[in-house]
Amino acid sequence: MKKILGIIMTLTLCVFVSGCKSDEADKAYAVTVNGVNIVVGETKMEALKDSEYLREVNFDQMLQKNSYYQGIAMYTEDREYIGSIEVLSENEASLKDAIIASISVKTEDLSKVDITFEGVQLKDITLDKAKELMPGADGDEESVFDPGSGDYYTSLGFDENTLTRFETKRNYDVDYSKGK
Image 1 (tube, helix red, strand yellow):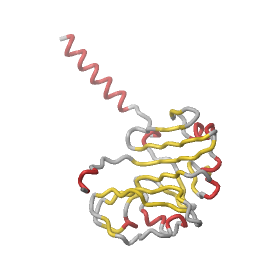
Image 2: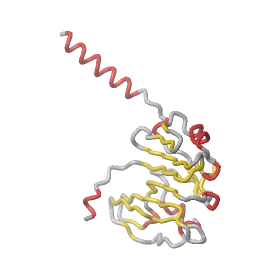
Image 3: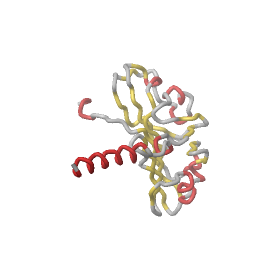
Image 4: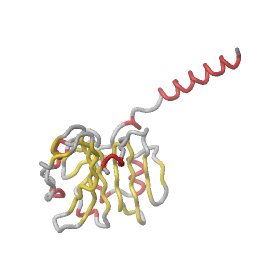
């Protein structure tokens, strides 16, 4: 009887603890690209059709149902690679109707990039500022990351207190073997 009571108490505690997690940890951070608000996991690519970083992207390209596409490259006006976007297509549809799943920026010169994180231009984010913007996040002198609750992940990488890498994404279960 004590064993059964112990199991019931343990299960009750597990349910209680899992039910108490913060809603803050289960939401996307605020990001803008060229002044357009992006919520990873919700915003469609159509929102970025006028972005100067995606001038060469064919937004009418058809995508397969239940597909995850990687490597949509972002370039500055002088053709410098600054990062990429990944999208999810739940239905057979054009790229403009796909959901933005991830935004990743990696460049040595963020002064050419008009992307904000939590309202702050990426070029202005220091290690201390990243920790302020992401309370409770883990990190060291080279990176700050928030693994979220499993739905979202955000990471900022630094070189001598200068942001050089940024990624925020909505996690999806993707079976990459189906595309082969």
